[in-house]
Amino acid sequence: MASSSPAGRAPRAVAPPSGGSRWSAVEVARHGEVELAYQVTGPVDGMPLLLVAGLGCQMLLWHDGLCGELCARGFRVARFDNRDVGLSTHLDSRGAATLRSLLARPDACAAYGLGDMSADALAVLDALGWDVAHVLGCSLGGAVAQLLAIAHGRRVASLVSVMSTPSLRIGRGTVRARAQLLRSPPCSGEEAERRMVALYRVIGSPGYPLDEPWLREVAHLSWWRSDDAAGTRRQLAALLAGGDRRRGLASVDQPALVVHGANDPVFRPAAALATAEAIRRARLVVYPGMGHDLPRALWSSLADEVAALARRATG
Image (cartoon, rainbow, N blue to C red; front, top):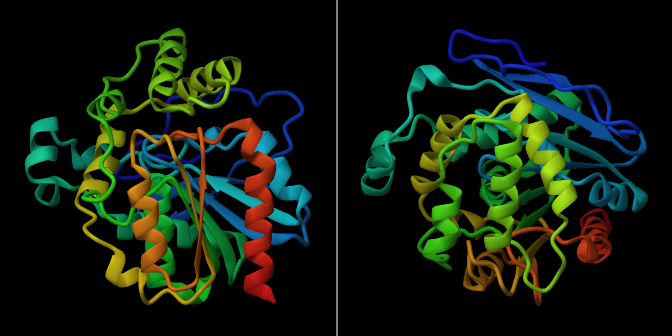
């Protein structure tokens, strides 16, 4: 578990792991004052693949089934808690912006930037001893992965940007979806379960069944590990202040895969198109019926696409 630091605090508790977990014990990477909890799974000699989670999402949101598909295709998979969520450092001393200030002047109230979060990801690569890795990020994590490829391209073998955008001005989502992402924190594990299910009923994939039992399990465990609305708001400020990455993405020379849902209510498909157009070696895959999540029925296809990308990068 990540320990507290002068800049923040440790999470309130660590729940016992679920039975039969394929993941290693939680380890800690360090980036200055920030400690980042991470885990690995898959063959020791597999291709390194770093997963970067979305806004307010703990690493638990990377489903074991999806990660199993990736491992079966030869990847050594690492996942981690971004700063301000889960078992990583929570930067309480930096305060939290109000919703009004977030929407009016995010650049003025951001406690840190997406560049700091991409440097966190780099610190995890360093802790793993991975000089070069394939990087897959979802939503906010896609923006972080994009910046990692822009600023530290020699460390990124290939880039996978999933349900993300190069600029918040492109592919703006629905008001209902944005409102769900800004709700106050739950007061109990049971309330966390209800809110998680309610969230994914709005932003999830209309063309696929919603896995409510798994969402409830992950929501409860995430709340037990640490639920921090102020931390999520600091992440959101970094995203809102992130600017337009298309010029930087034009310099990315690694093979890239851009994945999106045709029914994503958070970032519309135009965001994926803009991302793919900005990267000269990008392949665009848009799944009908997919929203702002990764449905079980698409795991095999997504893993195939990521593996094919890795073969392009190494071939």
